[in-house]
Image (cartoon, rainbow, N blue to C red; front, side):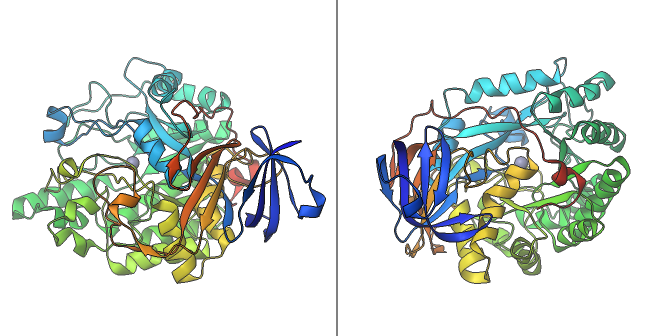
Length: 488
Ligand SMILES: [Zn+2]
C-alpha cells in the first residue's frame, strides 16, 4: 500500500500541468498520473481539489545566523536568526530546501567550512539545506577594512575536491561593498583560478558581482558631498557597476569555461548582460530577489527605507520591470531572498551607505509574491513559476532531479498552493520576524500544505514538522547540459 496519495490537484510537472494524482512511498514520489492508473489504497489521502500542486520551493540565497558586518552591529555582536527560525518561515511559505553559505576560515581546509556550517543547521532545521562554499567573504577572521585575507593557492586546488565531494557551488565577491566593512572581495586573478577549478570539476561559481572601483569611488565622493543617507545607496551601487562587473565576470567565465550564477541581479543592464551571454550559448544564470523586482529606489526615502534594503541596492522602476520580464520570459533563472532575519529595530539600525542593514526576512513570502506578481499579474505560466522558484535552482546548484521537480523517483517535497486565497498580507500571517515589507501587499495565492520528503511539515497554517526533520543535501552534481550552455 502507498503511504500517501495527493488527489485531485492541478499538478505542475515538466511535461505539463494536469489534474493528476501524486503517489508517495516513504520519502519519494513513486507515480504521477490518472487516478485510474494508481492504487486506490493509501495510508493517507490528501484532497488537493482546487489547489495547485508544485515541488517545494528552493531558496537559493539565505544567510542564517549571519554575523552583522556593519560597524555598529559588528561591535555589538548582533547575529541574525538561526536556521530553526528561518527554516520554519520557509516551511510555512512553501520552501523545503535552503541554500545557505559556508565560509572558509583562515587556516582551515575548504571542506571544513561545510562541516562547521552543518553544525549550526543539524538538528535545527525544519527543511533540507545545503551550502555554497564561500571563499574569503564576510566573517573571515583576520580580514580588516584595509587588508584582506590572502587565499592560499593550495586552497584553490581544493575547489575541485569540494565539487567532487558533492558541494558544487563556490561563492565570491568582486567588491568589498562598502568602504568600512572587512575586506571580502576576491581579486580577479584568484577568481580566474577558482573558475578554472570549477570548470574542470563541473561546479558553478556564484558571484556577488559589483565593480569595486566604481563602488569605492562613488562611496568616497558621496561622503565628500555629505550625501550618505540610505537613499543614496543606488548612487553608491549604480547600474553602471553591475553592467561593468557582470560583463567582466562573464568574459572571465567564457575564457575559463566556467558556469556562473550571478546573485541578486538588480539592474536592467545586468539582465541585458546575462541575456547577451546566454545568446552566445554561455552557461550564465541570473538570480534576482522578489523585492528587487518590485520596489524602486524611492522607497528608501520613506522613514522605513532601510527595511527594503539589501546590497547592492534597489534601482529604478524600469529596472524592476526588466527583472520581472526577465523572470517571465526566461532571461532571469531564479528568485532568491538574500535571507537575513532580524528584528525591525535592528533592520532600522543603520541609516547610511556604510551601515544600512542588508538582507531580507521574506523567505516565507517568496512563493506567494512570485505567483502574484508573475502568474497573476504578468502572465507567467505555472511551469515557469515552478522553474524560477524551485526547478532552476535545483538544476544550477546540482540537486536535480532529486529536488525541484514532481516526478517519480524525486524526493516528495510537495507544496499545495491555494489560488483562491486573495488578501492583503498581514504580519499575523507570517512566522519569521516582527516586520515585512510585504505587509499590506495584495496576494493571489498562499501555500496551505508543505511536505518534506513524504512528511507533512505544515498543514492549514499549523507547523507539524520538527527541527530535526531537515537534512544536509550532499552528493550534489550539476547536469552536463547546465554546465555547457544556458539550460534553464
Ligand atoms: Zn547574500
